[in-house]
Image (cartoon, rainbow, N blue to C red; front, side):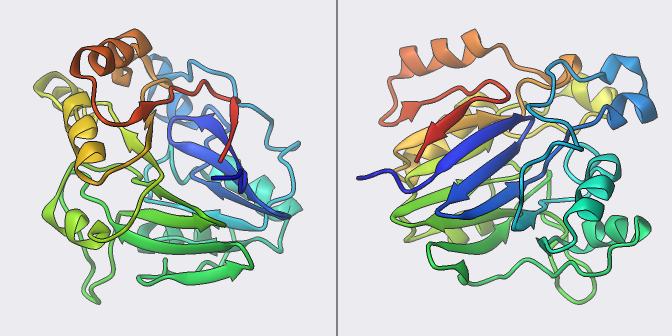
Amino acid sequence: MSATGRLQFLGQVGCLLESGSQRLIIDPYLSNSVAEQFGVGLKRQVPPPFTRASCPHIDFLLLTHAHLDHTDPATLAPLLESQPHIQIFAPFESRELLRSIGCDLAEAPPASWTQLAANLSICAVPAAHTEIHRNSEGELRDVGYLLKLGETTLYHAGDTIPHPEIFAALKGEVIDIALLPVNERNHYRDAQGIIGNMTLREAFQMAADFGVKTLIPTHWDMFTPNSVFPEEIELLHKLLAPPFKLKILQAGQTISL
């Protein structure tokens, strides 16, 4: 399969995708807002690949949910001020945060395949963080995204644990690359108010179940109390020998799709 675009990992779950002349960014976290609001124990451990002021031209912004490391007003306000043309898709709580910084243009994530450009389509799927939540109108609070970039299908799970509704939404999709969170939920993180996601084993099994060709772990690098050692990820992949490639990306690293 020939290259159909590029992916740059931004740290946490953020990524910048390029398909032809189009750029799409997901959950950019380029500030230190979490530490400023919740304490220095949650200061970012990796520098942003670019500053909020030097962010490249963006055509589309996708948000998965309203937690500060995913929908960050300190990142998004200057980005949207300098690039007011950006088309935004965001679930309802994220749209509320956007309205707080003067942005009323965000749309609900599309629940069916929607073409954004010649070689770029998206579809929102449920995310369970750690349950699936809907508002009174049935709209999802937390989402992941399926994306088609030319011939490549990518699944960005957002923050989630495995859930039957997610399995149903992904059924029949041929997924080339999956970005899955691996910062497991557990008693000690719960006690600190940290909402974890999949365990490594859950992420590996989910990737195998859906025939994913390459797994990119996310949510492992940003905050010390909520991190995973990359060596731990690599060792489990070596020991289990699952039927997919593992690609651990450092913040700022770019790969061809």
